[in-house]
Length: 189
Ligand code: AMP
Image 1 (cartoon, rainbow, N blue to C red):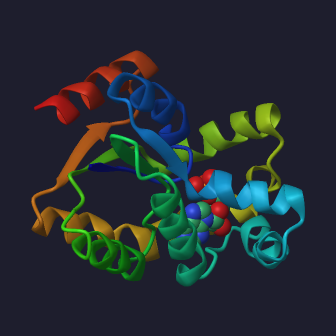
Image 2: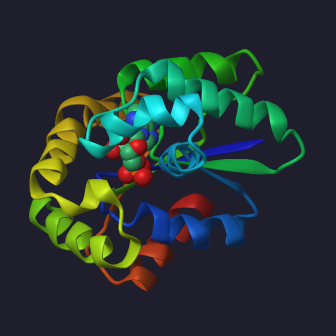
């Protein structure tokens, strides 16, 4: 089983690239953000609990997202591999993922990171707000909070995975096609 992580700040293009990657490499896409938005839309207890945190640009508790990942793995035993998008986002999540995979004699294969400047994040998210209508994309203070949260809580994972020799960074400000080409080369090498 293959386990790839698509890493990067909000607005880096993870969702866009994930669609192409899963098709080419026959992987199952798991986006914790998409799963949480589905829970919110359906008004489940989990969705109701997550709503305020998400709409203010804060992370939901580690146990919540780890639980979602665990049950998705358990319910999809017959796939060739997974592409994790937007997970892990904290060191605790990364450690729990490692533990979960080690218990099955598996491990993260590669972390593919899309790097973009903070100013580009703002431009991209403003554009996405017009298309997708996400509440957490609409307000500049919320976007700033998500960027700050990324720097404080998620960026430390770069060193975490560099130490495991699994971290591969791709310039995310190229065209969609150029970014995808770099991703394919990184996965295939
Ligand atoms: P995304 O679609 O990946 O930008 O995620 C949207 C929002 O969902 C984030 O701003 C967080 O509030 C929440 N979220 C998604 N993934 C995670 C995660 N791995 N850990 C904590 N919160 C998450």
